Image (cartoon, rainbow, N blue to C red; front, side):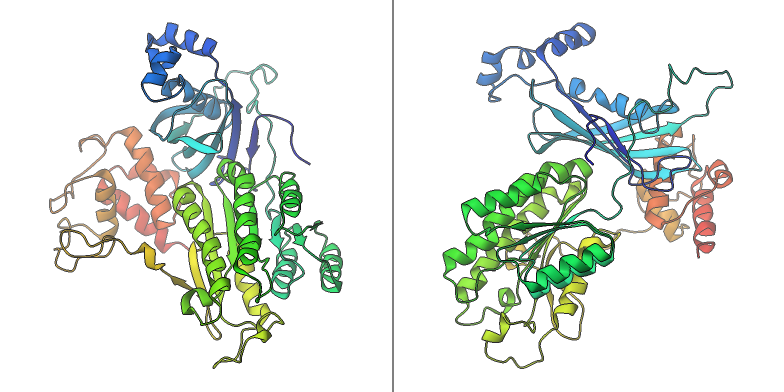
Length: 504
């Protein structure tokens, strides 16, 4: 059941000690011009960009904008009221403003634990401020969790976490289009076996879909069937209306396809507009959860370009291009978008084609890869992946991804073999070298004596950031004793080495 509270906190189990990595707190707020007057009285900021419509319009903003530090004020509430609550000690933050925040429009703040260290008693939070479906600012907040005072405290007046808490679904609902098809139906069943509830779209339900629904119910998962032709405006509206009733991090597998012999306009109508409409409906939801997965069933025809299949191939490319753009623009915010492009699959759809030189894939092979992509614990590989018999999915770089040559004559993003490698600092192990790089110490110099309170910029706040970053980079958790003793560069490197040696 959807929560009616405005403030939600998602706590993956187990929830002991500090909030775990992935814990999510959500807060909603709308700023008014009266809020600015109060802010101006406190801060002394009376810039007309925040109060004079004519000035703001002439400056190119169209309307007065909320001061950045006013829009960032809820960062304090997110920390002090939820992550971690009243034990919080706000250490600092970095903030990137990405677009203006406007008055009288709601803002959703999404705070997610990016890293947590029980030993250091520290959290690193990623906070997005979202307005009108776009990220207005992106912040990283560092927090320490202090000990509670020995004196008694009135829990009614000062609750530990005043904001309501709710556990997120471990297996979010997955939307599958074209669910009467063999690949879509087989994938949906695999997802149901993993505990995912399903929203299944179909143009014409058949016996196979009824069997799928029955088996899913026997597995104890919920199923919603939307009978709609998403290649038509009315059917697309019905599909989008069903999406509006979902909550939690969105998952979509778009398999619906027009008949192979259909005209180009019909091919595109079934593949592109439903994907665009689904993204428009689910975009804010994905950004709020900092988690969304959108997969399209493409075809190896996008790589091979067979003669006589131009309309089919172009329609597939259009939908893949849409997801590629979504991934590029929103990938930094936890949204993963990709296309699975299998070779010939043994289905009635592909049996219309002449036989190929190799045996076809079985629907189960494609379904297994798709289900893994959608439900894997770790973020899947974005972009286009091709799947042929006898192998796993292989990423394919789109031809448009290759950048123009740089002035040096090499492709941007590719290593320039003529460039000399960055010299390592003498006397440092690879782990110590990583610590030095995180601290921004100059390469090639002797840093064996670098230490907390001795090396410029390495203070207690930087120590918290350093411990969190190194635990995440090397996949370890340091003990309190390790953190207490690791106040030199070599000491921290040795603590990390011991933790790595003790991993299972």
